[in-house]
Amino acid sequence: MATLTNTHPSLKKAWHSLCRSSDATAVPHKETLMGEDWVVWRGPNGQVNVFRDLCPHRLAPLSIGKCEGDNIRCGYHGWVFDTSGDCVEIPALGEDATIPPRAKLTGPAGVHESHGMVFIAPEEPLTPAPTLSVMDNSNFQIGDLPVITTRASAGLLADNFLDMAHFPFVHAATFGAESERLVPPYTVTRDGFTFEAAYEHDFANREDPGVEAGIRPLIQRRRLTYRYIAPFHLELAIEFLDAGGTNVIGFFLTPQDADTVRIYSSLWRDDLDGSEERMKEAVDFEIAVVEEDLALQGTFKNLSLPLNITTEVHTRADKTTIELRRILDDFVEAASK
Ligand code: FES
Ligand SMILES: [Fe+2]
Image (cartoon, rainbow, N blue to C red):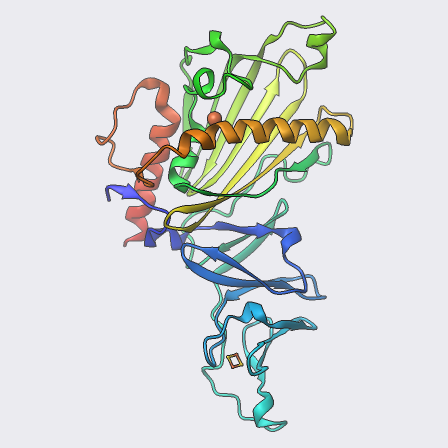
C-alpha cells in the first residue's frame, strides 16, 4: 500500500465522524462518507438512526422522506421503515400487505454517539471508537467551531494536525513563536491503532489578558499532549504552564469523497470562567489557526498520504507523523486480510 486516499476501501473498517449530534433531528438528512450517502434521523425515543440513503424499492434517497414517530416514511411511494431497517408498511398494498423479505434498509456495522458527535463504522471496525480525554469532565466549557468543508485529504490534514515543526512558519500570525524553530526530543507511545505524544515548548500567548496587564511575558511555556485514534480522530490537550488552565481541541475529519473533507472541531476550556465572550474569542482564534493550516493544505496537488516510509524524508522532529503513517499502514494491511 503506497498511499492513503479519502476513499481507500480499507477505511470502511473504521469509525468515522458523520455529523454533530445536534444535526440528528426528526427531519431526515443526508451525510456523505467516502462517496456513499447515509440518511440520519433521530426519533422521539432519542436514538440516532443511520442507514444507506437508498430506499430498497426504487432506490430513491430516503433523506427526502419524513419521520413518523421513530420510523421513516419514504417520500416516493410512502413505504415505512422502522429503526431496525425493516419495512413495516407498503401503502399501495393496503392493510394486509405481505412485506417482501428484501424490503430492508442497509445499516452500518456500528453507530456511536459521544462528545457531541455521531460516528459510524460502515463495516466491522478494526479501530477503537473515538474518545476524548475530557469526555465526562464538567469543568470544561465547550465551543464548537463552524463546520468546514474543504478540498483536502483527510490523511494529510491528520498529518498537519500532528506536525510539530510548522508552527513558526505556518502560524506566525497566530501562535507561532519565531524562537520556537527547534523541536525538542519527545516520545511517542503507541497502543494498537492509537498513539500519544507529549512535549513542552515556548509560544506567544496572545490570548492571555495577563500579558497586556504586564503580569506575564508574551512568550510562555505550554505542554502539548497529542492523542491520535486511527484513522482521523485527533485531540490536542494544551496545558498553559505559566497562565494556568487547559485547552483541549478535538478534531474529527470526515472523508466525504476523493477530494473533500469535512472538519468538525470543538474546544474544551477550563480557564475561561464560564465566559461566553472569551469562548467566542477562543473559537475565533482557533478558526484563524485552522485557516492558516488550510491555506497551506490548499496548495497540495496530490490528495493522498504516503504510507511507504521511503517516499518522503523524515527526521526525528517528525516522530508523530511517522507514527501516523506506520499505524495507517498497519491498519490498511489488517483491513485487507
Ligand atoms: S422508492 Fe421508496 S417507497 Fe418507492
Ligand atoms: Fe497547524
